[in-house]
Image (cartoon, rainbow, N blue to C red; front, side, top):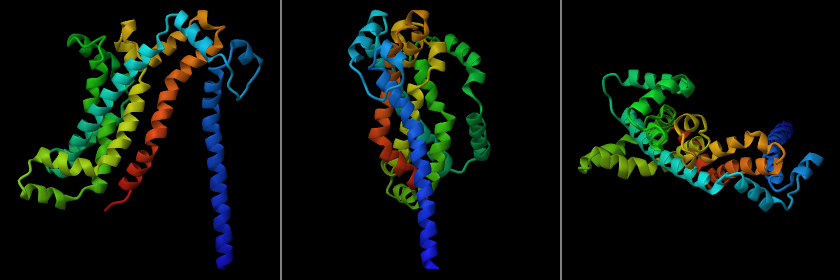
Length: 281
């Protein structure tokens, strides 16, 4: 009986590994092809698919520069916006979630339900009113219009609340109050250090979302020197680039590679944050 159970378990595990391997291949191959094509010439790309890099990376980069595509500037703009957005979103989302979890006040359930509703409403539905509001307060064509709204990120607050509920130790909060710590002091010195894995996880998601945020930036930013990297990449769609496939792939790879690096560097925080938040203490 035990032998049959062990055999069925091993078969089940093998099937899971096979499915995961297939998913991994499906995920990685297109990205690798894009990176490889960024190093190939247009003629090589037209000859067929190849997984091996070539020697035309510098040539493709020179083509982008000759067309006025300033990738370093776009990278810098995207990095500044994404970094500041991540800091603002993580801090204020954690602070808001802490208030919802710790304190009991009238209208708490209504507030949380309102946050859930905001999570389910796409940004595209409110972009016209949002743009008009940014124009009236003078924040159009500025990075502030992309960074400051992350203070009230409903999705981030929802994630932070779910995570804090799973790790919340009210005894530590009571102990901090007995020791004379302020409410903000308790959050900064006690709860936030405990919630660091979840904060890292939230930060990675916020950074990736801000980096890939093309829609809002395209609506609000008009000055070319303020273009983010995704906005610069979309300018490659002109007819003048239709024969320069290597340069097009290089522009696309430039917008994707930083995200891959972020995931490689901080993927362990994602696993730790989700696993720690999944168990109720």
